Length: 188
Image 1: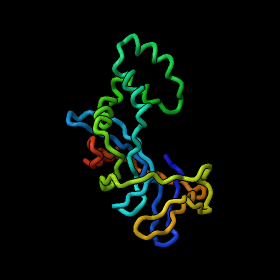
Image 2 (image 1 turned 180 degrees about the vertical axis):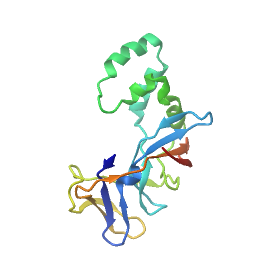
Image 3 (image 1 turned 60 degrees about the vertical axis):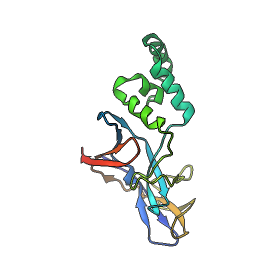
Image 4 (image 1 turned 90 degrees about the vertical axis):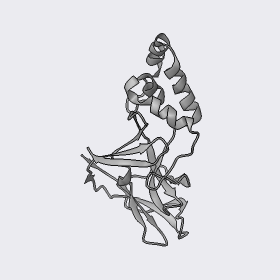
């Protein structure tokens, strides 16, 4: 499978990172070896001083709704199931809560920690999301300012597309504990 990608550069230094760092499977694993898929996004880590993948935790309202569905009885789940299967492309958190194989119990453990998202490279909580300008196309090779300052050098981060170029990626499974600390990486 080939994918397009984005390239992030800095106006003041030679940092260059691409969005391919988000490819692969990212999962949390609890002490009982149960796993849940982990959403991630491009972010800035002030400890790494670079663009890196960071966790994307669900917002509290979305999680509370999904947890209510998870804790509901069988008949309640059955009626909820009819209402929530609206999303064709990506299942909602509530859909995942109703599927026993989804690992929602692991997500509940993560949310119970009441922690902020962490850098998936070093585990630091000193992170922020890096916004990609609305409508930015991966086919465009024109650098676009993100409005994000590169920590460590003070330059502005720019994003550009791969110009229509696509690359084949090897798929890895990246496993993290419920605290967001790296455990292992295996080739899928």
